[in-house]
Amino acid sequence: MDILEKFSRYIQMARDAATMPVGTLVTYNAYKYDVLAQIYDKTTTCGLNVLSRSDRNDKLVVCFKGSVYAQDWFRDFWAWKLDWPYAKTTPDMSKVKIHAGFKDEYSSVRVPMLGELSDIIARRGKPQHVTVCGHSLGGALASIAALDIHESFDAQNAITSLYSFASPRAYNDDGAASFMAKMEYALRASYANDIVPQVPTINYKHVGKPVHVKQDMSVEFADFNKFALLCTPLDHFVENYVNAFKYLNNMPGMADLFSQNMSDDPADNLKRPVMSAIRG
Image 1 (cartoon, one colour):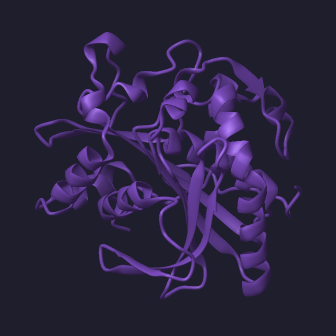
Image 2 (image 1 turned 30 degrees about the vertical axis):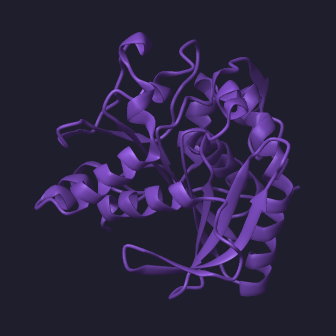
């Protein structure tokens, strides 16, 4: 699998999330997708699209809109935790806590999103590989949605994975551990001195295998940790991420480097999910 090409493809989807009308055909890196759903909540301004690979009837993408309005940024930094309020299939989920602001944002679109996925699975009658992606606030919401989809559907219906970009931290320690134990695979990207992946700082954890892209286009397959005051919001813009991964995707040898360090084979990475039929 070309992991780098997927990063390039999914960050473009994250950039366009919630703007693609139902029934349109969109193309990313020569891959064509049908837009099956467009969901938006006016109160929270949370939005997403559900896409389906045109050449496959078992590949879905759920892409979440990132931070746009001031209230989105307020939620990004609203840092108290709440118990996991959604479906739970194992005892460890009782210890999972998530960021309160992200929970409210995600909850505003959760029911229609799960309903769309349930309808698609029922129509197709076969397991669906569901990739969830997002940039910024959308990355945090994608990480919550990925675990929720995992807990809401069984393994005969859905297999869930995550690609997140510039995501703030969304889980407590136990939540991050449960996420990583359950997800098929999860990958996460940060760029240069982007401040958003550095917050919230107290007792929050990232999820997913990390890659950090530097301004000189060198990469490190490790967490980027830097004192927030030394970071900048200027490196956070989604086009920085889009352009960086387009550039890397055209660099000789870079695809092999990503594949060697960020395998999305569950045997190399994370456990295969154990899901449950839709529980509401």
